[in-house]
Image 1 (cartoon, rainbow, N blue to C red):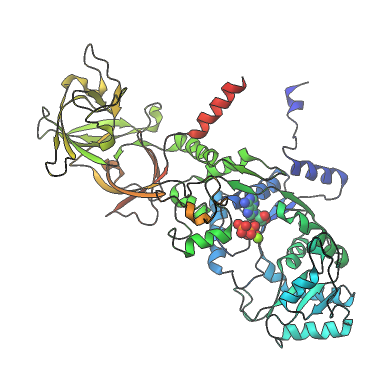
Image 2 (cartoon, helix red, strand yellow):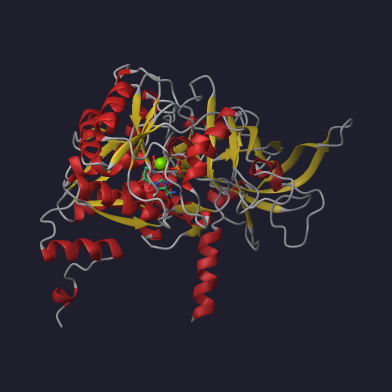
Length: 568
Ligand code: ATP
Ligand code: MG
């Protein structure tokens, strides 16, 4: 078989298989998908998966993907969320090409269709209280009992529904229900509610309506109106499909095919707007875009590149069974992109003063340091070197443990891109006992890190020149929860008890002067420390603020290597 033939397009997941079937059988002659967020919170990484699937499928089959806001609940929705959702989708690099729709634009049509169903004897106004309704509906083990209002005449229903719309009734006094079943094992089919009275203004329709469609009544019909062919949603909607099918059949309108896929779950985090709202409202994080949040706004501010998120979505694939993905995989995708794109520079998180006693007091060298020592095409910048430096406090030990190649009394190390030095002595604060200064001497001939003759220098450490370095606030972010699944609580605890108290540690460090004018949002590798991003909100010329994106330690890559070794 020739290579060409082998490379003929193949469906790469079960959704594509279904789409190709539908195109082949003629069920549909095009592919139209949509991403349908409810504007009641910011998007999170789980939504990125849904966005990725819908937009890339449409692209693959030369179709379209709409953005539709399923804005049926005026109590929890807002313009702020609409704006944020659009910004996040654009940031991921997707374009709905002006096809921006709102379920609220279909309220008139939905109302008419509800009237149709009433006329067909397929919907009725119920006047039970919410509690009574629950009782009458029964449950999985107990059949439902008909509401005393179930057999109202068509005329009576039409009149009542009209009066509901006109605002004559209080909230909770009446609802419109579909007349489907009292004993279905699928509770969604037990005469589900289609309309509720809510005397609340809507962020788009203002005071025009005081009855609002339920999500279940609006969703399928909205897809139909837009001519969606493949209505992709997460598994929890599988049980709603028979209901959506019922509505579409009874109305006799365009019938999209609904396909369910598994939600994304990630370890060490929560992915549900309800919980994310709680974190924000309780002040456990600093807003929706707190860099610890799994929201796209948070990940963006943290410094995650959008390509990394797309690669992650590609890697996790599409499955029909729910599972939990290791957050280490997401971090691995971030490191992969940053390793290939982030210039290497030097910064010191916890500064310790280091004096090179035999270096001339007034000497200043401008060392040419490459942005990537493995690839000269990245270019270089000048880094000042002088007698007094800051090095990382963690790189010094008064008493070195075994195998310690960094600083300790008597040790010799390489200063990255500069000289080899010897640690001769250290100074302690007499009051606290804390080491406050290292006294070192340098080998003049070791410029560029050349080892002095006959010596082997194992350790290399990073540094900045004290006089020239820029002070910087550095925010060390870590996972938001200490438990892999924070929702699996021990007795007497709640998921909020597992918030990681170390998820944000702020240190006052120093960075090399070339970073003074670093662009907000720009990403850098601080040598030996990790990847950092200039905070787009709080950083300014007067006050540099960096967020740690991820450390350099790639637990996922290690795990993968181990599995490969174990498997071969
Ligand atoms: P949440 O449970 O976080 O509140 P939601 O499903 O209520 O999310 P919507 O705004 O209704 O949020 O979601 C828009 C789309 O994104 C839906 O099609 C939904 O199925 C999908 N989606 C939501 N969460 C995830 C997830 N964790 N993984 C994959 N897709 C998701
Ligand atoms: Mg939802």
